Image (cartoon, rainbow, N blue to C red):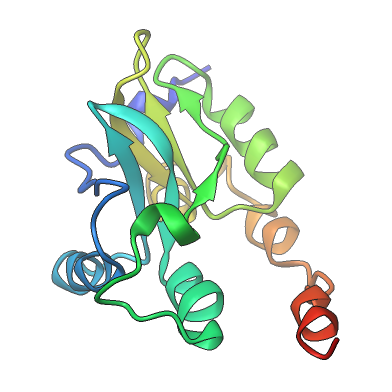
Length: 150
């Protein structure tokens, strides 16, 4: 079984939880990515995606210059270790329908990220069906609509 370290993207751009959403968006634009690991002292604190910025912040009127990444990031994000097998990572991605997962070393420092694209191009046989499983529609979260109408 091949370890995920063989297919992951190395030299991942990270962002601090204290950075502004504007800085996060600029980094995403500069590096042509839709997600950034949020790290403090090299340790993973969460992930922020372009969707987090749009749906959790802008749609609710938050100012991207003043709003911190920590206010809208996804905490308690899934991750894997660099020695985990590709099959283990695929299983985790399927279970929670995620398209990318940070890769940590033995001491918990981020060393890469593996995406659906990495798996499709670097391990095409192992990723069969993954796109279908991850892309299955889920119900929209309408809870904020009900709260805002009260």
